[in-house]
Length: 205
Image (cartoon, rainbow, N blue to C red):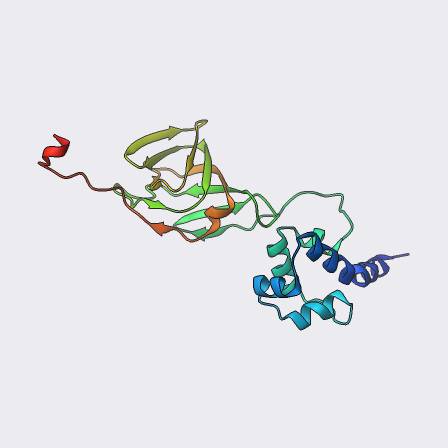
């Protein structure tokens, strides 16, 4: 007999109380949560009292604020298969393959940098956060402030992303990189350049 329908009903019946408990654990008022999610206080109240069933988009907003997965948020039964099925995306001219499913916190990606990615003089940028990279195959040219480094397969680098930085693939074949990015690194990059060196400046001669 298939009892999956009963399991779903049980999860939905308990969802309101779970949402209320999660909010209180975060020491948030309904007003706080409404401001963070963009969902009205009245709707949040109805969800917590069970007078309204949550839609997926509302649950996604709540999961992002609480930094948990949807399964954790709704109390879905654990599955026996922990495998992820990442969907690649194209960003900044590279292929990004997400390796983590939980929103918030440190995110892991496999980056595929096409041959010649970044060119000869890439623009260095800075943003809040911290990054860690491990070269799986190929080579990476890492520009970090005034440092110009080359990382080969098996080498690791970690750095504070408030330092202007850029990286390129100087080879004629794709380069694969494992990247860990802190929460602040998910935000948009802010353009920044190192201060240019002045020629014939007595202070630097």
